[in-house]
Image 1 (cartoon, rainbow, N blue to C red):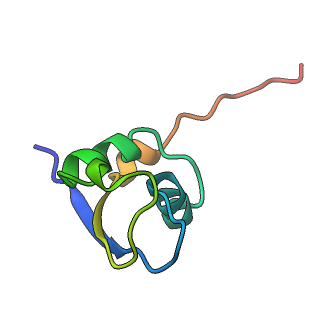
Image 2: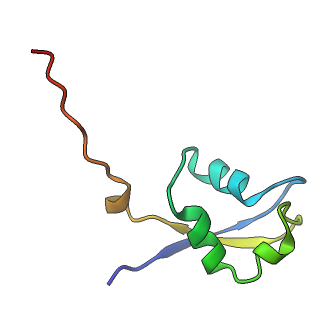
Length: 77
């Protein structure tokens, strides 16, 4: 059983979109987090593309194992 950890973030500025909020949180692309955030916050999509100031959003934090990517070895010879 996988346990999902959530972080609650409050929108504190104007013209903040969900993709921008997620980018600011992780500082890199994280596949699936946008969709998982929408699932964790029913009605969030109904607010429109620009989130109102003060909106609290639960963002799922991926497990460290899921973030590890296999490294590809390259041989020069």
